[in-house]
Image (cartoon, rainbow, N blue to C red; front, side, top):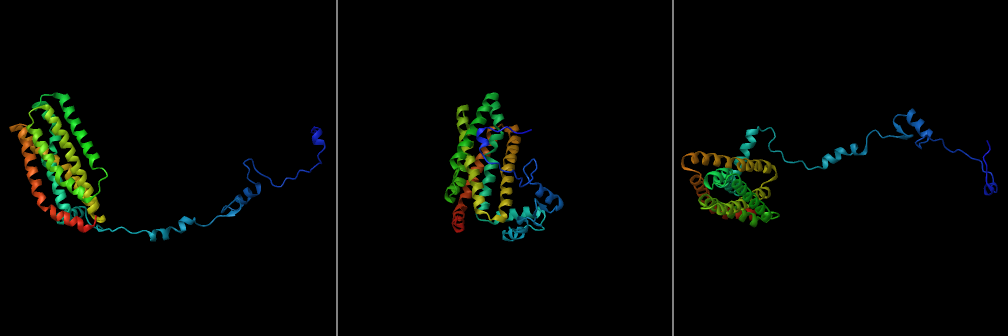
Length: 280
């Protein structure tokens, strides 16, 4: 059927239509499709390499990587744990820091586990009193974390490990001897603040001062002491509380820990000298 043409089209010269390339419905030339089918190693007629470039260069990339020190090659689990304990005991920085963490956890931090007993038996406030005490501890911990956040100066961290644990001991002692519920709320919040500052400072100082090949083991040891010391302290105080009440065991634990922390301060001159020698 002839195609109708308007007046303008009739003035144009006839141009023959030439089909230069046959294509598929997806716009790919038929010739390239045939070349791909006939030669599987090619894509649209282009030869594929045997290996990708990144795969060829992989040995060079591996050679450029710096191998990490592996001191625990072939060692047993107990052997590597023993290495961590020996390193901590012989190091002039890590030993005192972990000792303070242990004292803080054993004599001071168990007050958190004993909050239900204090809220019910000591202050007679029930569930509402326990919620108030727990909230005070949490708010204090948040305030302590914000106060020490972003502080990486060794001198600041050393003060954070030295002073707040002693202040936390005083706060817990006042909490145990507190005459009223509002005083207990204030002491619980302040103790949470000082415990948070001391714990964060100790962990940050360990990360900065310990060599890379021992850092994981020392941080694991820190986590072990951080979790186990309060549990052992709370269990001991709970056993004594069955005989003499809640106040005396907590006050005794806080007092002993505070005095031991003050005794550890005698070694702090050597700790500061060691920190300065590391050039942190």
